[in-house]
Image 1 (cartoon, protein in one colour):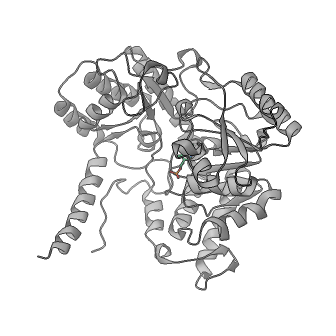
Image 2 (cartoon, rainbow, N blue to C red):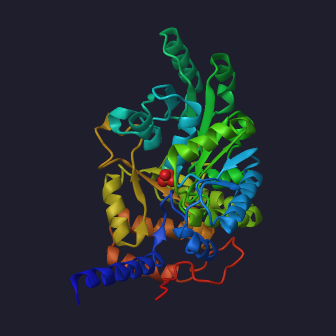
Image 3 (cartoon, rainbow, N blue to C red):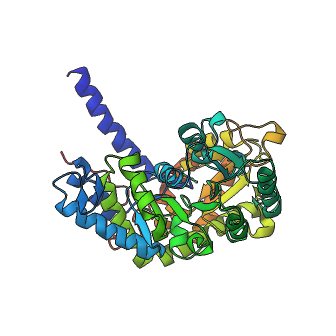
Length: 440
Ligand SMILES: *Cc1c(COP(=O)(O)O)cnc(C)c1O
């Protein structure tokens, strides 16, 4: 057999191993979810090989007869679900959606406010010195929101004072960006509407993590609270294909469309637009029930870990109002998030380590941070409820605190997972969620 054929076969072998492994794990990665077999069917259609530059009906390519119809359905569903006057479903990811937002609302070098990484900000909001998208790609000067560690949220008064101080120094701020990757509590968008009007600043909201919750009316409603534009990833609390979306008031439509094409994209991954249309329809029908359970499960998981002595953040605020649970693991025998992540993975429990706001002060960094971030979206989609969250917390406790044999727990996790193999909150709930598919 040729070397190339061996590698070719090896890829398929690895894909099958991965699919089988995922069907046996407890996945608590907050930025992930499981798309339905219906979404998977849409994204393997012939759309994956096509181009359709431009807007439906005004394409630069031929062959878009059916593609246009699907994209129009997708736009309609998105506008309805998010109660938005305008939706652009072309961004191929959340980062590209953010670049569309920056391009439509700011000139290169303009100054913006955003969350610091240590406080839960995303690298696409960050400054050039750390390689962040806003700074490195667009040249934006980024100032970070003042943060209240106790409330685990943006400090409104201190941040307003910071903005006024910048203006006094002759440093204009053009854009206020809310949203982040560690996002347990809604951001105070409404509280900044007055100062935004006073200084003619526009307001953006990155809902990458919480877009599913927002669509179901379960977190906050940025477009009603004063945001001019909202961006999202479609695969975190939304169980969609990996894609992005931009939502806004009608008055910004032309600027946003131009930012997408010819600005940032030629191909916009039409198969994922089809998949997005499917998940938007699923969310119209089942989103309310699904998101309600995601929230209940996140609180239950937080409570279950807290009862076992874990340092879950924001106890006085009920731990979380989103799908996320942030835990300070520096007091566990494993001492840091990295060790916890590694050991849990061996036990078939997939989580990620995370920087805590106070890590820097304690001499910790992102390689060995003090925290872990957990999310309830994927396990909820498989039909798990509050009691299963308690079971999961106990598995974690046995690995991280009691130091039990990870191999033994891995086998128990595999058995536990046998009962949760179908996607819930979907029109089709018969097909195995992690079924390995091959066409030949
Ligand atoms: C995940 C995330 C993104 C990036 O989304 P991709 O779809 O992975 O490009 C952007 N912003 C925030 C706040 C995120 O958490």
